Length: 448
Image (cartoon, rainbow, N blue to C red; front, side):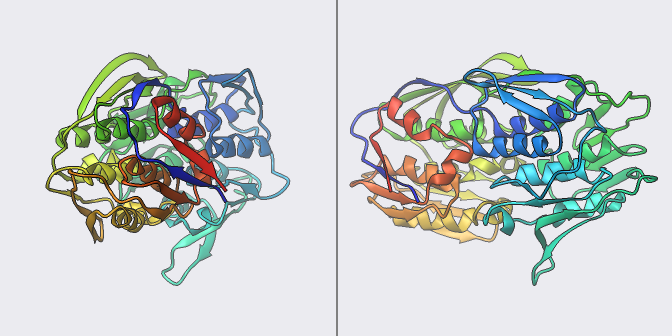
């Protein structure tokens, strides 16, 4: 099991760096390429483990992929109805997105499948996708616990040959791009329209990509409708350069905001407005950011972001802004640790059921660095410590990549080296995280 030792930063972090490809967009691109008619070429891929799980899952179902140069993959699709029965359970690794979105495709197949994952994924809740999929005639179940929450493995029964998935109107109790995407992917196979309504707008990568591929889909506010009537049921091959992942960029930008006299630029980053809640909260904290949009990839705006060292102040974050920054809440809590005054983050209860209980783990990490924090059922209250170094710490990331990377950023401000245990999961989203920090001027050791 790998650990990081991060040394206190004695000089500014300076430079412009790339970040890994956007995981959320990558998952969707590889799923749709796998059921497309023809061949897709997807460039800018950083080969994070979660996205590779999606590629391998689709290969087990009959599509084929191969690496093409340093950062590209070529995927040969099967067509919408060309998937084949896998030889055994499909391993989704650590990727809840792979498991949930793939289930939306597999519930329409004439063969049974089982989806499995690692120990962390096996603790993740699946009932949230089971409910709408069952409403349209899907047959799937997991392993129930004492609370009645279905968890992996996910067992999906074959859809009888004479049946099609039914039309669906579904009001989701939470804003979740994974629920929405699973429902929309199942809608590609349904006999009739699919409508899903969310209490607020979750990230809309699926809608943008489906529209770009010619699928008849409309979105009005948080209501999304997919009506396949008149559609020929064929998806063309994709030609896509994956944008950089704003969730990964957030850690580098935070380091630039926190380390005195630093200036850090991240390039070719996705700027989808359903993902930019992090940038809004940073500005509320008083962080200095410059954002420049430079282009568009398959309906996704991309550009560069520069962060400069800032004197931060406490703020309050909640509601739909936190929904659009849910993956960045750990590093936002890290920024709050250096803000003057109190920062309150609410409406983040979804973090209780990620790779770890991220609210509990972040509270533990902050306390290890000497920062006062109160844990709420749906968030955190952080008492900032803007002056003086943080305490060098010994923390355990418990296999959660975002906890590990947040701890690494905070460790740059320590009064002694910090050791972070169980960091291998960083490779699921940011395989070159340590190398990128080093390129900016940080002193980080990888140890066993």
